[in-house]
Image 1 (cartoon, rainbow, N blue to C red):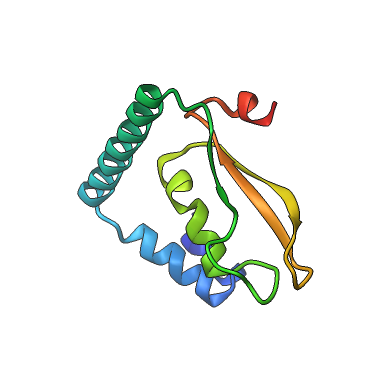
Image 2: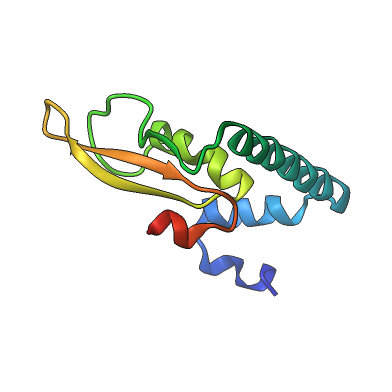
Length: 116
């Protein structure tokens, strides 16, 4: 069904959909296993250290502009990959007047607690 709708997407998006559809079941299973293994390691570290919330900057580098950018995406890539809920809240402004954010990631399945 998705293949028939590809012309409704931008070329880059359509290409990514096609790439995803070409992934073998074996590769997908390996990726899911890797995802779960990393999640378990992070959950174990949280439990052992008594961590409720991971706190980090929202962007890895001082940015010259706001918007969707690669350095900022790197900061939430781990949380996205392993399925932990993450949120970014405003945390002031840089010397240049750009917004700064504080990113927080909670335990798997604990979305409501993170938001609280």
